Structures are given as structure tokens and as C-alpha cells.
Amino acid sequence: MDNFREKRKHTREPYTVSLDFTVLLTQESEFKRVAAKGKTVDKSPSGLGIITDFPLEAGHVLKWNDQDNRSILHLAMVRWSQQDESYYRAGLLLI
Image 1 (cartoon, one colour):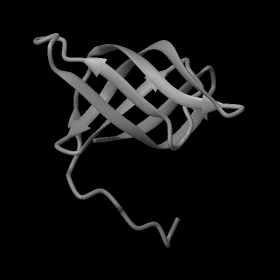
Image 2: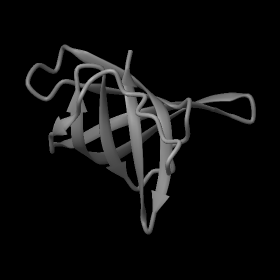
Image 3: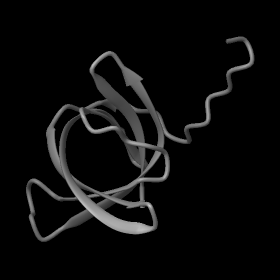
Image 4: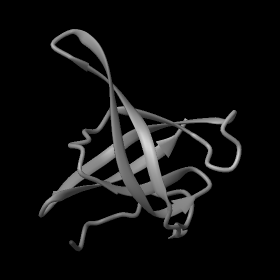
């Protein structure tokens, strides 16, 4: 990939925690909330990398509560998703 250009504004660092999240999506013009699980693989000030069994797509919005302070809600948008064998690897932009 000679023409590849890094688009990230921040460097990612390894970060592994289990994550229970809700996927907010529209399907056939209907709004849906789907519970899913995953695991983070890295983080930066502006995003996370995760792996999950759920077929995430660019544009999906994820929400989850902070593990240390359940009153804090996190939201992120899926920027990209790639299927690898039996799981999906995705890049999230925190919003």
C-alpha cells in the first residue's frame, strides 16, 4: 500500500477491557437498539479499536456506561469495520 496515508490525529496505545455496549442503528427505516459485547484493543484521546462478534458497519453509533463510574455515558461512531475470520475489528470515533 504505497499510497496509504495515516488519517489518525492521535497515536493509539494498547488498551484491553471487556465492553458491554448498545448499537444504535436504523434497519428498514426502523430505529433499533441491539445489545452486544466486545473487547477493546487500543485507544487514543479521540477513539478506540475494538473486536466484537456483532457485524458493525460504518455509521453505527455505540453507547456504553463507564466501567468505573456507571453514571458516565460514552458514545462513539463506527468509522470503519472489517470482518476477520469469526469476528469484526472496528475503529470508533468518540463523540
